[in-house]
Amino acid sequence: MTLRNIAIIAHVDHGKTTLVDRLLQQSGAVRTNQRVDERAMDSNDLERERGITILAKATSIVWEHTRINIVDTPGHADFGGEVERILNMVDGALVLVDAAEGPLPQTKFVVSKALRMGLKPIVVINKVDRPDARANEVLNEIFDLFAALEANDQQLDFPILYGSAKEGWMAESPEGPKDQGMTPLFELVCRHVPAPATEEGAFQLLGTILEANPYLGRIVTGRITAGKIKPNDTVKVLDYEGKLVEQGRVSKVLAFRGLERLALDEAVAGDIVSIAGLPNATVAHTICAPEIDAPLPAQPIDPPTLSMTFRVNDSPLAGTEGSKVTGRMIRDRLLHEAEGNVALKVSESDERDSMIVAGRGELQLGILIETMRREGFELSVSRPRVLFTRNDSGQLLEPIEEVVIDLDEEHQGSVVQKLSERKADLIEMKPSGGGRVRLVFYAPTRGLIGYQNELLTDTRGTGIINRLFHGYAPHKGTIQGRRNGVLISTDQGDAVAYALWNLEDRGPMMIEPGARVYQGMIVGEHTRGNDLEVNVLKGKKLTNIRTTSKDEAVRLTPPMRMILEKALSYIQDDELVEVTPESIRLRKRHLDPNDRKKAERQREAENAA
Image (tube, rainbow, N blue to C red; front, side, top):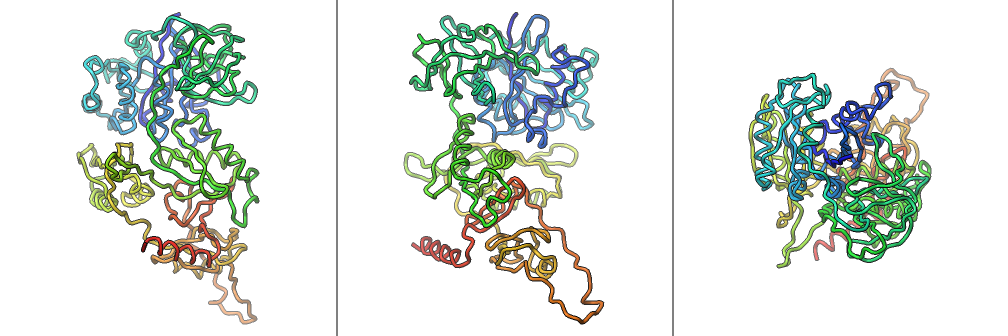
């Protein structure tokens, strides 16, 4: 049976996981009466909730004596570490673009990696059934994008298909025919994508995806570059420098067949397989026959741009909601995560019971924290900090991102003003149809922390922002942070509705009546620029005098809802987010007011020096 290995590249929400659903159904990999969830490849709970692909995953289908291994790649640049490794396994790329939105930054991010590796793309313009579809303009934008990314002549001569993954058809024209289903796509993949290149010699495989199985232990997935492998074969593991990591036996050889993973008696060069039985093998390691001495080259990974401190939760409510609360448990979990996710860097911190985690962006770190809290962890995390670097002449450099914002024309003035205050440079402004405008900025990463919520407010919820790491540039100077102070609880107990009602003119609250609070916890936002300590436990004084005005019902304004990403971008350097399986609370780093004053004086003295 001939083999084809292909990756599907697309921006968030352009329909790649839905396309894989249709390919599985029409190839016969899923029985007609088999119950399969929608977006079957999004197996992770968080992926289903957010509607985005976070982890790269593989599947396999058979079409007329050809086995097509399909890799579903994440569309978000924060998960780019997954993408860079995945492209080592494939020989072709399916670039999927929305017929209305056109190529967006995350498409550009993955396509640039694919073109650099010499992959020949197939372009699929999806969602042509949308009322605002503009297939021909989008095709021109894709060609311009490929040319800007320095594609060679063969890559620029790409084949094109139009269709709708939701409706389950593809064709060479936007009008159809619509009765052939996915057959044109299957035929194009078999015709255009080359068979996997293999080498002569003994068994070699580069680890690309890592996962843990409760029964089989560590499972490493990759493409076999040379030779073949059977269960019980003796192999050795080399790191990227060629040093021996371990030697052992393969307990199982697994391969994707539709949505299932089956054990194989033998796997040959070119196929994508998973190998179990090697406890120390990880991503970017070469698994090979004992006589091999040189490792396979691994694709370099872009450096992290943000870091956060993960600490033990030391608030008065620590241990009341989670089951995993010790520093050792948090440390082991983070080191385990760093093994499988090459875009994360975990290091020891100078502070006791804390670790520094560096990653690609707020979303990637937010997903890690959300996963940990669902596993029962309690921890407190600091505000994201940007990682600076220096060039050869000692000049301070900071990460710059390309920001693309789609919004209604009436809101563009306030957005341009806000981003210029955050030291962003406007690069391009063009109409995108339907009274909307597309703005392109180069903005420092630290200026974008917390901007998403501000954009939604300024554009009445209609603005769409997409970000992509652009490169390092000279430091752009100070950027003003949050302008408002916070309301801080002075005591521990349960919040009282009467006290919250009396404090409403001081600013919006973040807690509801009955919420458990403690000294140093942030309970609301102050209307002014300074922090204010308040008592939210103060009940109504009871007397034996009754009047209609005194017995009025307390009516409270609904509190500000703090989801995890919003909380991380809201806090300042002297504040922390306390994350437990049940709650997200904001607090001061120093809970005692005297300690806060000492730290403030010390900070002022350092700044003066």
